[in-house]
Length: 311
Image (cartoon, one colour):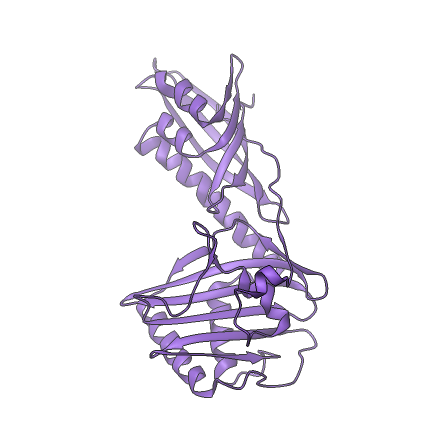
């Protein structure tokens, strides 16, 4: 009795090196990196995320792009006291045609362990010691990645570029380690990471239905324009969802667990399917299956936009 969700595909934004982007960029950024670096913004304000910000003890931003096209990434590491976070934005495309932002506007965020913080601190300080030569090595990878590295370490901001991060000097080692921690380096890794994200969203949705109740869960995970179709009614919009579930029987339960899922090539729409059990107020149990189609909201969170029962 789980509900099916479907939604229209959100359009991805093609990034290009335009004057509007350029005015927010460091003049030292190589041409290939400019549009990617410009995409590292604060979603709520649209402002570019600065490295040397108040309360940030150390910050590193690494922009990586494959010379033959594929998956590009902007990885930022911020250390605030004992709190070290990694922010990841992913793109697909080719240097000659441009890069498409993959997924939501907000970055993927991960919290790093104490050991990882120490390791990155050592790598960043070593890289800062060789920074200042924007060109770095001149060898172009035949099938690898180029990197633009920005650092704010010890009150000093600097940058360097590497035409081939396989040449692992101090800057290359920092870029490679951040690349490893961030993951999603290839199309296969990107797809696997996306499926894990939407599966976790479905599991969290199901867990919330048990801990806080079905009405709260369906209201929280609904897209603003959510549409729910049942055999007896059509529910439209998040406000409609709240109103429709207001009379949900206190003793009724809806449980489900996803089995697998898929995500679109642009990372902004996905589906999951699994098994469900509806327990009515009288204790009657009804087994079922469900398919859910998801879209990302502005902050990059997965929300359902269409939901209907499957018999």
